[in-house]
Structures are given as C-alpha cells and as structure tokens.
Image (cartoon, rainbow, N blue to C red; front, side):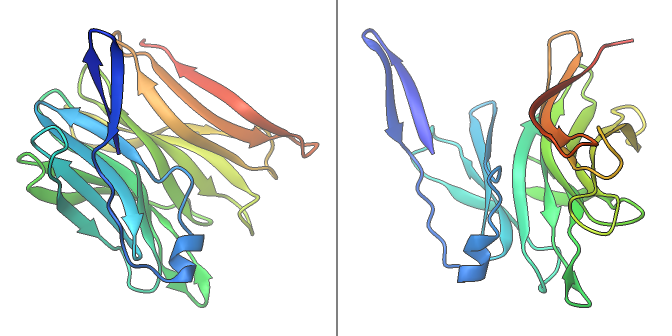
Length: 230
C-alpha cells in the first residue's frame, strides 16, 4: 500500500502497508491480477486482497500507521476466495466485490460474491451471491452512485468452458435493497467478455471498462460501456 502526501515541493510517496501471508504454491498461482482495491471512508482507509485461500479486508484509522484485519471470508474450504474491489456509500457502508470458490466434482465453480461492511467495518455480511444458470461467475469491480445504488461488474460463464463468458453488471437498489442484472453483454455467444472495473460520475452516469472477443476470435482488450441516467 502506497500513500501520497502533498508537500510544497510536490507529492511525496511512501509505503504504509506490507501485509505478508502464508499460502501454498497453488494459492499463489490462483491470485487474480485485479485482486486489490482501496476506499476512504471519513478518516478510515480500507484495502482488500487475498491470501491463504481467503479474501481479506484491512482497515487503518490513522493514515496508514497501523492496520487491522476487519473481515476474513472464505466461501468454501475446498477452494480459494478473493476480494477484488471495494467502494463506499455516503453513509459509510463498505461494499466489497469478489469471488467465492468451491470445488464440485473436481471442478472449480466460483460464485459472484458481494459483501457489505457496516459500523465502520465492524460487521460484515454477504448481500449478493450470483451464478449464471449454466456456470460460474465472479465480480471484479464495484461502485456506488450519487443515490447510493450499488453497481457491480464482472463476468459469468455461459457455456462449457471459461471461454464462454458474458460481461455482467448487477445493481442493488438503495430504496428496496433488491439486486437485478442491469447489463448482460458479449460480442459473440461463443466468446468471452468481462467487466473489470466500474465507476459513476457526479450525475449518476455509469462507465464500465473491460474486454471481450468477437465471433472471429479477435480479442478486444479495451472496451468501455456506458449507462446514462434516464
């Protein structure tokens, strides 16, 4: 974790968090390239990641001088769980997106998991567990809009292998607390597509970034999707 401090001569950066963990070789190989995130809530800083098969949320209340683990989550002891991204709403609730792995009949079947932290990160619960009907899913990015609706983007397996995937975005209504799939996108039914990150502007418009392959098998590694406020 790196912290930048504004000084008269410019920004000065320092390392304020280096959290080691013990993991098997298999755990290290399965760490996702997007398994990192940071969110500031008042004077608190939260970071997420993974280690030893579990997803981990850490918190600092003193500018990164000291850190504590506030959530350690593992969906199943048969596989790894990873936290990929986090965001906060206007009243200080924390939302973490990731996956919970589970090995069924020698096949890994990760589930899309979203967890919510309340009370300054003192209490945590799983508020969304999503699976596409024909396969696995994982949540990679999360944001909260100006109306405190939560938006999570990621990918879901739609066919016999991980090469058949759709870019999925789900929304939690701040009014009802109900989740719904707001976007199900692919360039080809037999290709892959995944949303990797998502953000909302000050008006509530949504922007998602990700990648997909088309019917010819050509990879489009830079795609941006937009949802405008009605």
